[in-house]
Image: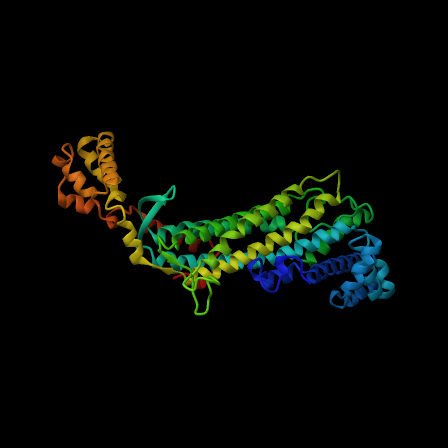
Length: 458
């Protein structure tokens, strides 16, 4: 019986994907630990540290899929040790050659390196999904490069932008995330097989060579020095995961707000039969967007636990280590759910261009006050123009009058403006600056980044 929502059949997919659950499952954890033990034995056999025949037997006989996790768990409860029961089970599988399993290393070597293998699988999926999202954002930004909407600051309408411009900001973030994923990969995908306190004491001078060869078989990098007491690699991964999650959560929250009934500029994908409420039949709730936004906070809390794991006592302790066992799976699962959510939402959102245009007119021209100020400022000076346009803007707002009419009636401004000029100045389409060009700039930068598939290039 599952005891965490991540594993619930009913709501588990809100918190993680089946693919990521498989990576962080107990069975895969065991599989990767066995893979490390086998790579170690093979390297030691090739270097003459253990008999070559024993290494061959271990490589052929050690099979995580045949291990009984229930029995191993029962033995662990008795031994009060997380790895020794697995080693005993492997020894039974390998017969006499089992004497050479786990030769010259310690538990944390195996568990840490196996965790890195799980993170390698995770990194591949996260990078894949970020690429897909970036490519989707390119299409969305291109489609809406000139789609006018209100830009908002402090939650209030500020100036006109285009929806494509908003999307291009998100796209630029995702290219930086892909940069980060690529940059941390060599540091993160580094194993550790150096013995009890990372000095290779049990293996002697052959130790560094054994480690290097075993890790190469696992396609992992070799550390310059053991990192049992240096947990920054996992914290760096958590930091990048937090940044990706932060962008995804921001996108979810932004679209959630744009979907509000009173705003109505966006709607998340809807399918017949989708239920918004058990009691209000009319509701079309932003459930997917809420799910996307909701996972950033728990992921950040899990990352905080990872950061605490950097506080290591002396050369090693289990207090910090166990925190990683809890936090890493949660970080990866929550992020996988967000990435899957974004992949489902972004291609299918409805962009209500008519509502965007209508909302641009809600303040009857006030949105273009800066444009008016700069045009008048060419004749009166910018600061003087600001004061006069401010007076008109506040009067129009408070009296709920047309901004254009108030401007034309102002005794100090009237000599410098005409109704025809104002009509041009108050047209949102004439005041989006370089927004469309910046969309092009971001898309070209994304395509030059080297992260995207060839199909996404024109």
